[in-house]
Amino acid sequence: MPGPTDRDLVLVTGPGRSGTSALTGMLSMLGVHVPGPLVGANSTNERGFYETRWVVDFQRKLLERAYTYEFDGDPRAELRVAKVLADGEAAGKLDAWFAPAAGQHSLVAVKDPRSIWFHDLWTTTAGKHGYQVKYLTTLRHPAEVVGSRTTYYSTETRELQAREYAVAKVAGWVHVSLLNERETREQPRSFVLYDDLISAWRPVAAKIETELGLAFPARPDPWDARHPVDDFISPQLHRVTTTWDDLDCPESLQVIADEVWEACLRIAVHGRDADAEAAFDELSERYSRLYRDSAAIVADMASSRVDRARAKTARKVRAELAAQRPPSTLTRLTEPLPAPVRRRVRRVGRRVIDRLVRR
Image 1 (cartoon, helix red, strand yellow):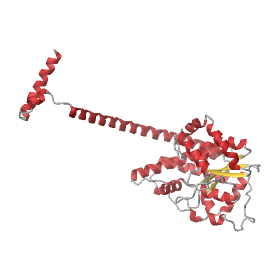
Image 2: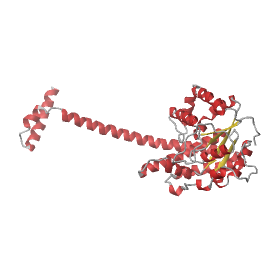
Image 3: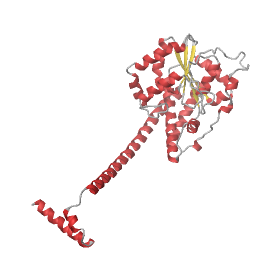
Image 4: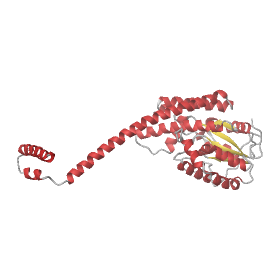
């Protein structure tokens, strides 16, 4: 277990809708400094997000520049993010924000699920200011995470589009979970279960203190004394209870998601676990292969759609041009004739014209 350090920055990570807001709210009430101003509460999270507004806006813009987003399921997204960070501009902005935001606080927490995409950026910047980065991840079953995102964020009403949204979010959960584990593997970290947090927060807080080497300034004394967290966290926060039976998810993706979930649970229980880490590496390969294969099918489908659209457009253009072309002399001269005669005359006339042209 890591020992106490002079200054600690706790980055609360994990896929969005995993309980990161409840966890960070608990940290704040236990005396951890969460830099403001904070993102305001809304109908999707009435108790507050406990997210620092500047950090959310900063990291969202970086991901947009990389044509990526928080729940991106593309394994190649990390390469796009790295290109955006290569010029050092983002590092300069975070460095300028960090010292005033952290102030003289020895224990600071920043919560934004996007932070895991910028692991090296945070580690380097925090280190320059004397802070050690420690990671805190909430775990919630992927079906529930996707169900929560669908409930609060999705605007799709048609069945096919709603299914595609859910499948994409399962893929995003898998990828972000794999990325989170890989980027935090060599760092001080603690994985906690959302169900454990909302059912009995004190053991979870004690686990975090032990695994991250922290001492919460406003911890209850004694531990069972009444505390503001008691009014903030409760089992009633568990409002979405989606299962795989509620999601039309491809079996191949569901199997990988379940195995990632089981590996996360092993980390939560045992901490550093060589078998779990080996499983994560193997799962990363399997997921990347599944994503590439799926992308190849989609590319073929898109190419077919493009070809059909081009052919349809060409036919439409030819028809429009034909409609605009003035009738030929042969057409005008034969118009008064009966239809059968008119067709024969025009056929013979075209043959005669073709022979004259060839001469």
